[in-house]
Image: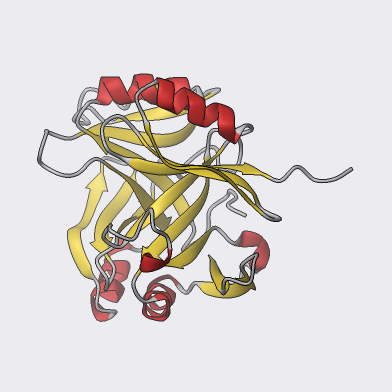
Length: 265
């Protein structure tokens, strides 16, 4: 389970790059109830999505055509430079080298050896997201990759991740779930999926897909569609886990939602 306070290797930030920040703010406000708060006049239009005053994500405008609209996932590091060296040693690449973000922390952007993008956040004044694993907040990350074993070898070398595999309902193989080093299975925050195994993702490049928690998957899908979003995978039940769907916002950024199983009383 994704929790705070964050430890080395755990997801501690996420942000959206979009060509239409105002439109994206309207969309995600309608879908999740998020409110937008500017990060200030010297941040190039960067801002935060918040719920009840707690930050659940960041958002930044990108010029049309400069980069594809996308959600990015950041992992905590105590030393962005050391992580950059580990990424390169593991066969990944440095997209943007470590840089200071005022006095808030240091960040860097990478690609793993298959080309899936990810980033790191070395906390300074900003310790990371305020809310995770509650309705409207980040709850899971899924890596779609052509080689699970190679991907795990890479990320375990960079972050020290540990993994456990569990049978997929219906006898369709196993699902590898990861957690920060030494934190045990209760700290699992994501899973690996062979890129060609899901028709929805089969034609895409390797990537991380973010899941946000919701209380009603079907109602959230309806709101997203009404607000101009696209439903890539309609609501599906996953035995013992919950009900999920995959969506794309009106500007092309993909994400997923998860309604967890309600415990039996």
